[in-house]
Image 1 (spheres, rainbow, N blue to C red):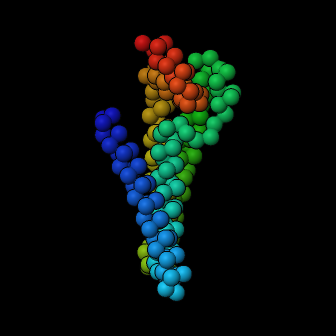
Image 2 (cartoon, helix red, strand yellow):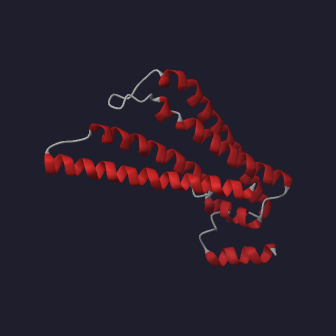
Image 3 (cartoon, helix red, strand yellow):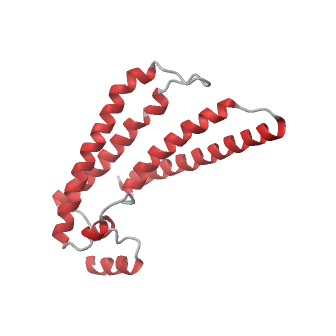
Length: 181
């Protein structure tokens, strides 16, 4: 299961790299065409915007997985292990609610967006705004897994340290690994 999850997140990372590279090629190509040949590809402008939206929302899922979103780490770092677990539990419950609302909102808007089309490519705008369903569901599932780990006592010291913002300091992580041995 862990290997399958890692493969999934690696594929998402590849998708981000692909989207960024495609955006760079489209925008740079359009700049060259515009200033070098007095031409432009309007399709590249629209697709670059769509790729940027997808890159942002897929990146949000990957960032949440790594506990790299903004948090109140100065407060959490001062808490005991039990306090950190309570904060971790509560924060992930709030994230689950927000992720569910986000995904359900995107789902409810799907029919409207499916009948609207991009002006240049003619793509259904459900392809653009539909990413909200993926992002909401992805964040919800990651938070659900974390809540489950807290409730069942399977959360590791390293995960607690990451939640508290201590993952960036290698000395702290070495100490956490020593304690958890």
